[in-house]
Length: 496
Image (cartoon, rainbow, N blue to C red; front, side, top):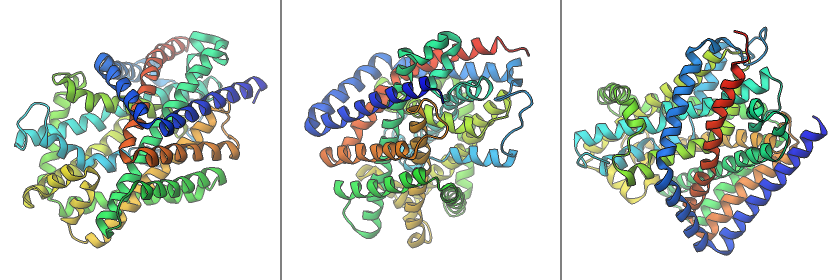
């Protein structure tokens, strides 16, 4: 790595670390003021620019579709004679694995049930409200998510593996900025990517730890206090930080394998015992409804307050995660053509998410009807208990409940490990092998930020983290729009 890259990496590191320190300090010293400020920022962005979040993701969708179907789809993410690093089966497996995150585990039952009880249009508790709820969940976790990730992944893969530029978000702007990507503009882009990634992961860490704490309370009666949640976060932080620092690739692969097999096992189990016919009917109807209304629901703002709380929030959250998920799918796709990359990275994980949501959501609605509203009551009382209450209405609860805790831990551990590595890479000038010291630093920072905020403000303080993530996602969304133009400009110079 050149001295220029090292200097850039150090400046990005210092500024990013400083921002994190200031944010944590204000959250501890002035928690109520920080929460009020965060809420004001969130309200301003979603009220005045909510339309832009939806429109931007729709533009990403058009851009990715055009690139995949054009002559540029034949271009490789690598040199012309470069072969894929992984077999097709291995590649598919890793892309499938990328579709299973902590958000899927947390919201797969809680969200459809929430929309069923408080739909944006239909009457609550009606069959129409149920169908709308499932279509909305498909919209929130489906193709749009992976379109966002594919834009970043395409940029990182193309400029890193084909053009030989550092693995930094700023490298995607070389066709526009030239060598200025190494200056203040490039550094600002990378700092925003770091900030968005850090707080996006911290939000998920808080949600995951909260669900684990609630699950432990529900299963074994141990009270889920903020202190207990902080201890869980600390343990999870130690696990993924040690794995990143020590380079225990086999250990992390084992964690990934456990996550995949547990996820498949839960899907099969819930499908078999949660009402197969009902689930299949729900999946078929929802998929057709989703496809038929794809464009309309992509841009729907018929209920502004509801749209701000759900689709707009999700778009912002996924944009905050785009940097490091994009790096993951780019990393495993080296040697693939752009067309292969786009079609596989968008439709394979989306398809898996549709199956997951149909099984979990369909079973929840079926069991809710059979139990006279038990799942609804659980979601109203504590949204984090939705998964455990659903499992309680299925056989073998004494086994599946602890396994659900393990699924949540493994789902987060893989994502946090990847995020720690990407944060280290972004703050070391794009070094593909960042120092263990730097990896350890970012692992500890992610955990410490979440713990301190929860200890001061309780689990409700996760809202502050979510707001910070959305705030960081707004400028990064604008960066991604320009990124699309930059990618297209670079592709026009290719001889295809």
